[in-house]
Image (tube, rainbow, N blue to C red; front, top):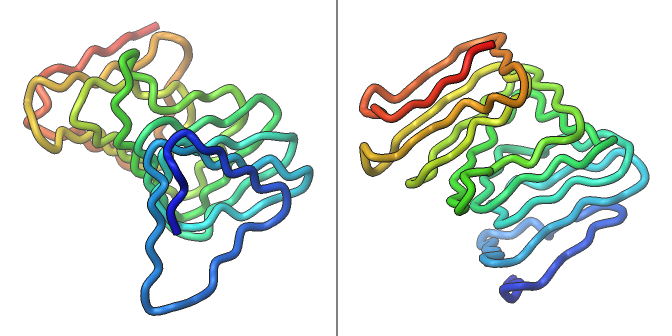
Length: 168
């Protein structure tokens, strides 16, 4: 399945794919929007932009990767449970999570792995992994906007030498 760049897929109910031996989704440059008016399950796959809207809970069917921006809109709740969210987005402003809604971390892991500068979103985490997968000139900035809470394990790649931290 290929979603052409610049296209938007809006899921108002459920998104199901057929089980098969080969399942490939090419969503580079496109957006998936989960905007149902009731709780929704977000499938396990790699997304370019993933936007979560409406006043309800979104859960993850499995681990996901977001290669651009994960948007948790005001009034919406993302509850990943035990799953892993890998953020590899590289945006000019460093934002890879646009967080205005709610995040209930459960025992999930959030990984910042972009080969670029990224801002660690001010939200609650269970496990937070701040990685430097390719070059040591990458920067991870801990947002001054609010408190970053970590209930489980906090891991920083030792090769990451450019970390900008804010304290309040």
